[in-house]
Image (cartoon, rainbow, N blue to C red; front, side, top):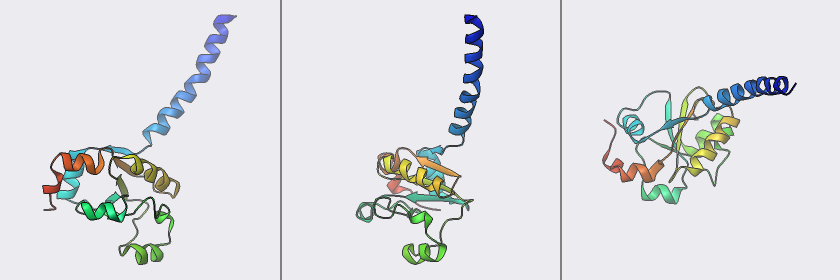
Length: 146
């Protein structure tokens, strides 16, 4: 009888594990310095670097080719209608099918912004974990688009 219960318990856990694996595999794609360096040097259509730092932080260093959507002051930026977004940020709103790669100073706000973007329908996302600190530590400030 105990063996039967343990088999039943194991079979119940299996779908849950599958669901967890499925959910985690659908999460944001991790980006590292080399990945972002390649995107800065050779921007790809359909991939958008999204800097979620505040304007005062961007004044200190602006990553080439990145779109600044300050997470603390405008967390709902990606929920705005296209016209309103363009009026506020002076660039076209990213499309839902584009890959948005989020970064900040260290990576914490990037993760929160990515989760919020998913709630707005942006399912193709990535996170540059090291963010600007990693970028600068690896000499990224010397890298320009070609």
